[in-house]
Length: 185
Image 1 (cartoon, rainbow, N blue to C red):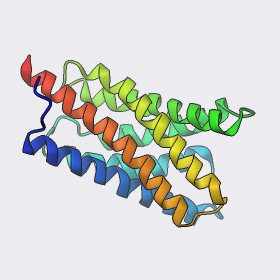
Image 2 (image 1 turned 90 degrees about the horizontal axis):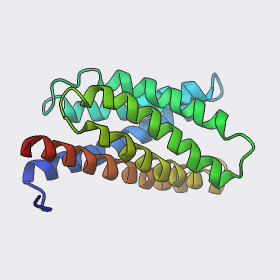
Image 3 (image 1 turned 180 degrees about the vertical axis):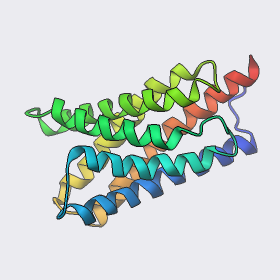
């Protein structure tokens, strides 16, 4: 398989990464704004999942019309993953806990999004490990940046954008890969 990206693949990848970064930031800002009113791990996950899932669905909807449940599944997957990850890692050292929380988020959202992708791509199962890798490292970077200052500031947003970009690059690459595999079979 040719390693070079077609113009269409490059556009998809760039929009995918931009959507993941921008909507993570929006979700994070909303979470910070409502923290004084209500804040649970599940609600935070739902909000961030809504930002990321809706933005990714906007990128996908014209290219893959059969993924109409993408946003809803992403919201649910991220919410469950965030709550389950944080509960499962209580008492662990911070770095290990944040990495494992990211892995649980990646697994949960990866399985949820796979439910949409499997209808379109025969090898969509690769989406799940890609999502686990993407969010394990991405969430670790996001959490590390947030923990540097203890409160949201420029460092938190720049670090969060880098973590979200990493997750977007890995999942965008996986999306392009499974799409190419489907076209070549």
